Image 1 (cartoon, each protein chain N blue to C red):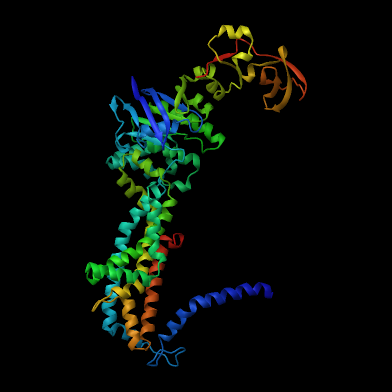
Image 2 (image 1 turned 90 degrees about the horizontal axis):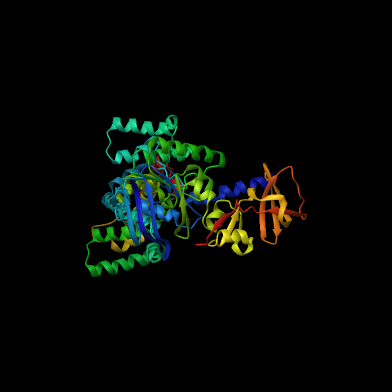
Length: 258
Length: 329
């Protein structure tokens, strides 16, 4: 009996290890005390109201949302053609491009952030374009990787079939390739958006006076306030991410691609 | 009148020449097979005709028009792949309708033509199914309907039956012939299966290492092979160098380098040469004997009644009238 119970115990402990931190944050968000405490000794929902009252959160939420959507859009616009070219053509230097595209995901974010800071300071770029460019570069590897996976599973000869039926290369891509990698593109979009939305390391260096993303605003807030507001906000963000993933999973079966 | 004309076509695959100096003519309404082992250049030739591969030199003419540099979508050439290459996200109906939609055919006309095409291949009942829910044979029928519904000037088929099982392959072979007759469409058919080529073709073009080895009607290439390569491909399993055969035969065909006999024409039990039975294999209608003889190894078919055991000596005759005189190219 014990031998069959042991794996199950290990499984539950692992799950607890993974989900535990989230549970702590979730429970602490409903604490009644004025400082963050676990377990809380009284119950309150006032902190959720307080989140909406903090000006820095409201502004930075819209910045993060805008930044996440725009950089995801740009990364898809660049990444889908790159993934297509890498999978369909024997290009000279394809391996180098592949390595180059993977490197931002391998180099620590702080290093990338510092490098980009130097770069943009020298270019004299303003905050918003710098953030957008940095995030786009950061998301590109994820997009290329995920979209490539779904292209590998798609036969190239269906494009030839489409062309023999009268489609140009571009029409063949639009009518035959795109519908069949829809799921991969959607998965890449969700992954990219979430990566941008909770990006700290790179944004840290590039946010400027008056411009902040939500994660940076949260860090700044915590330096001066240690009440459950931050736990309430974290809970809302977790719900937001989980909701996003669930919707796409329902619509497209996301887990097949990531 | 010639419909498709390949003039001095040279094709490269990577650095190596895949097809060299190919000249080929296909007449209107004709079904011509390109037959040969893998790597002989038959598929490369077909891809060049489809526009998926640019020739390094030479010309391709279709109905008198030079299409050598025309992109594939402007050629009006239907293509059927070995892998079917159906669009996985579209139903059988929409797969067939694809080419018509690109041609902006009106909806009522489109429904009529797609319906008729699905009817020809016997799939009217399965029009709404996705390719994943069709069997291999059904998928190949959809691929065929999709290719001919646009009424192409030429239909190219690249080993269309080789992914099907043996029984289905025979059925589809008959179907293909019927459809080709019904529609009167000119077809270029690529295959490595000589039975398929013999059964389907008006004319067979046998390719070897990027060149045409021999061409002719099925009867011609089957009964009168001109080179050892063609003879071997057509089942003339006994090929002997000219030096090994009796003088009388050699004198009758002074230019021949080799002579060939089909195993069913080798008579066992009487004759001028003797050989030892190396192996005996039961093949249903007959027994197949492999003999070791002074002439070399000889294969012969004999009725199942007669029986020589392995290791025993048997006399045989290679008849002069049934020999094919070959000339190595």
